[in-house]
Length: 206
Ligand code: GLN
Image (cartoon, rainbow, N blue to C red; front, side, top):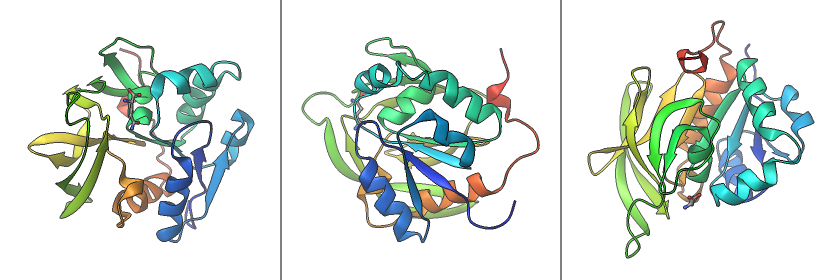
């Protein structure tokens, strides 16, 4: 579509303000999204980290789950970080939990164990075929246990996938908004601004 993408940050729960600042560091204006009615005006939406169970509960009264599926079906891009990735995943374990089922992966919640459930590591990003090192902040993070065939891994930490993409869906187990560089936010803005003609494979029923 050309021009700057209009990116929203779901502002119901979690660290949405840090995402807005990360977008702004990349020169992208961020819209705080509190009502599902705001979605049709956006190219992309970030679902921040926080607590996925709490987020699901807050989303229920306004029919957010259906609204987010509709947004994605209509070509909207979604980027889930940590709890946001848990919401996007096809399957959630530890414990099992309802999810949007849009991103073809299985995630295990709080999977780094109690003693080290928060840490800062160094990982590798591969965005648009370009590799770079990046700081990654993991806070009670999930682990991506399996990915479907249409999934592209775009970040690794200790040999494991920690960020994945399928078409207009992006998910990360860590918190890119808490590190100084905003490469993933800029990448998401590029995804959101290039409206794809065809729906990504991940939206097709299996
Ligand atoms: N442990 C949280 C959950 O299961 C996610 C943590 C986070 O988003 N930083 O929802």
